[in-house]
Image 1 (cartoon, one colour):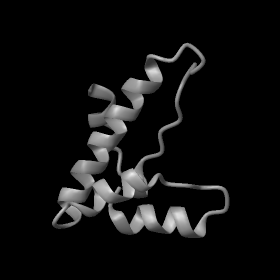
Image 2 (tube, one colour):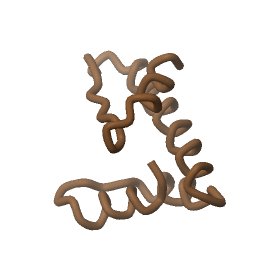
Image 3 (cartoon, rainbow, N blue to C red):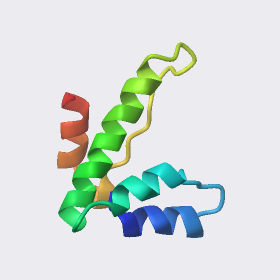
Length: 77
């Protein structure tokens, strides 16, 4: 995900809130590729944190724009 996608989700999708810390981290990327890399790092961190919670029984991962490569990379981590 890059900053434009995150801002769209945050501002235009009812009930969707992207934490300010995530928006700030994404905006640190110099370009879309750097922002996507940061987004993947955030996703890895989030999944690792969720895995440690006994109440979390699974996750739902949506491929961005139908591209499965980032999802496969995330799952390998």
